[in-house]
Image 1 (cartoon, rainbow, N blue to C red):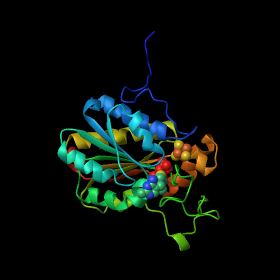
Image 2: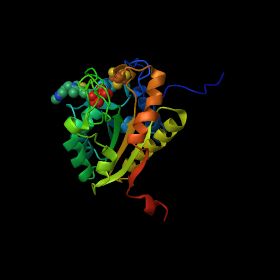
Image 3: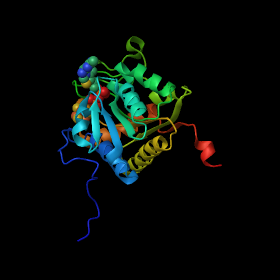
Image 4: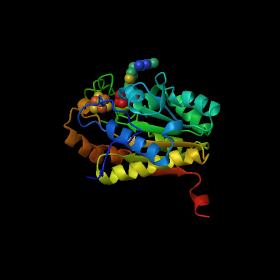
Length: 251
Ligand SMILES: Cc1ncc(C[n+]2csc(CCOP(=O)(O)OP(=O)(O)O)c2C)c(N)n1
Ligand code: SF4
């Protein structure tokens, strides 16, 4: 019998610890498929964040480093500059990338570092028990906004792709989601492009992936997938926010 579907070799055999219905696992798989299809697993260095995906260093079958909370793009900068022939990516949640790591994110983009950033936006601090994140939606109930996020008191959510689209050094910015098959296929294309850009020396790429946290959203896995469509995508529209080389590719 021929094998038609199997786990990418760029993932280890470790069992993922994510909650049922959490889409971190789907995003791991997409990243691993891209590394394998590009044939670069053996020369890839990933930078794991602090957050639910901290154990990414156990799951990706490439060299991994774990950065302090929010510092992954700074660590990736050093690694990529020291080893420019390697493929370097960060994998970060929204608490990691858009709160404590905002400065590292903006400045690595401004410097046009030749790295690939996988930004997992689940609109909440997952690992620490569901506190409000910079990306929590207006009105969203979290452990620290029990009456819903009040933008008059705590401000508005950060839209990272839109924010970075004004940063000259950023090369490629796309927002995708992994809540249905069509979106997962598009997400893979975007992640693949993010890695290809780096291999072609095109500078800073960030792929924002809208992801679920059924546990802290207080939803079933199925309801969480629907909530991405109903609440997240309207606030965080999917699409390409910047592609510096798009015009030149067609020439
Ligand atoms: C310097 C520092 N500050 C705060 C924390 C606590 N902390 C750990 S994970 C986390 C938030 C993680 O949320 P996110 O990045 O959105 O990832 P998720 O768990 O949702 O995937 C925080 C605040 C820490 N470990 N280190
Ligand atoms: S707490 Fe949320 S983000 Fe973390 S593993 Fe569970 S569902 Fe996923």
